[in-house]
Length: 365
Ligand code: KG4
Ligand code: ZN
Image 1 (cartoon, rainbow, N blue to C red):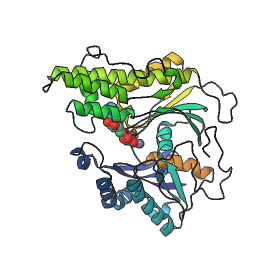
Image 2: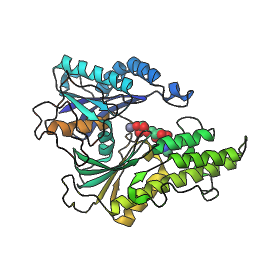
Image 3: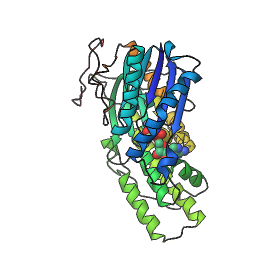
Image 4: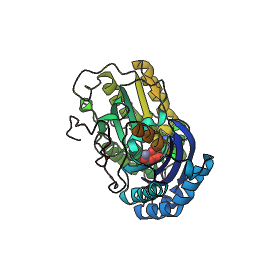
């Protein structure tokens, strides 16, 4: 089944053609240059830019896949979570194509896309997924593809957001995660030791980055107006080190004490950690997670090439599994779900759904 997938949940206009887990094309048009001067994503600008580029990006995805619209068997789209007015553009265009081609529509959770971005046939379930992006920091229990439960999430800022804010404090531009990594590589991570987030409360299985951000702000402010290049490198290294140390510490605790399965029974031992999201582009973080995997004897799977940040190929892959389960969406009812949790089921699945939505322990159905 060839799937045309569309993704417009934030500041990248994306389209892809996938077949199962094969990626026939994956086109990403970044809007970063438009948002840079504002130091963050401006929703109205994002919407306009999606609107301007989406048809071109879709056409290019079909062309790059060396097929035509007539070869497309289903249309997939990110329904949430994300910026409401940005999601709306992709959903509208996907619906139009599904209607025009008279093909089914598949509505996908953006986070499920990130979870499956490093999937290989060797991954064994149940597994754990760690998603680290500009908007999300979540550990997700994956009983099997399509059955998820969030077991740890951030109480405040996401990791990528925190890295971007720290980079901004150092005058490194937006989004600053990648630049912060470069400067950190040149610095001494032990020069400035920042306080450990959630110290003594790690068992709560929650991430938190806002206290770290405030401590960093105080530290940077205390250094005065002009920072030397060496100061910037050491500060970047200190912040990044602590931010990753917190991430791996909570991940370690969670993996060492895996939760019960979705029906409250005992789960098998976890052998696999699927990692996804833009922050995984960071080599230092990947090294830390590899190390953790070796310690715990868990295999760590990173996203495939070009699939760290937002992209539509991951949406197409998730959609392929939904299609296998008969989870098609009703184009008349699908609407954006800006806060859609991966463990809350899609409310607009058609009646043909094989199993029907299940209720999880947290009350989400
Ligand atoms: O997944 P993504 O592209 O978009 C969201 O869904 O948020 O993630 C974007 C985030 C930004 O915060 C960006 O600074 C961060 O990923 N990022 C990095 C690196 N490359 C991108 N963070 C750390 N090191 C990097 N090399
Ligand atoms: Zn994302």
